[in-house]
Image (cartoon, rainbow, N blue to C red):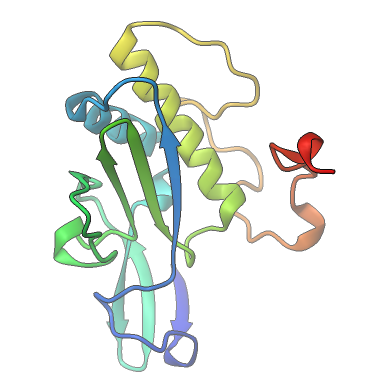
Length: 171
């Protein structure tokens, strides 16, 4: 369980503003049935993302949430994390046309951790929808155990040394 004081959370529960949003652009329109299955499967690999935040006196606590992660069609209005609209989760997934959006409270993870979750969701979606098995290096798959230190808080010395995708095109 992680605790936060109200000093660093200047907003009410249910109106989370500190959301990291990653988008995945596909070649085909998203099939919501396969996406729901993929998200549920991916979350078996990342149980530490199935969380909600509750108020306890002057503190906020991040606690387990066993309700399903909400997958919804994005019609132009996002849903607040930690609200009833997303089963009070700090994670939600939306889709529109060929795009999948992963929304995660920054209190759970930064971009590196969220990127790993996104990769696993995408892998599960593609293998389920197209009935193919993909070979991807360094991918965290459902059924695999958590890696040593995977749930630790990162400091700048432990961040991966990766270049931006378009790094070679920047002059």
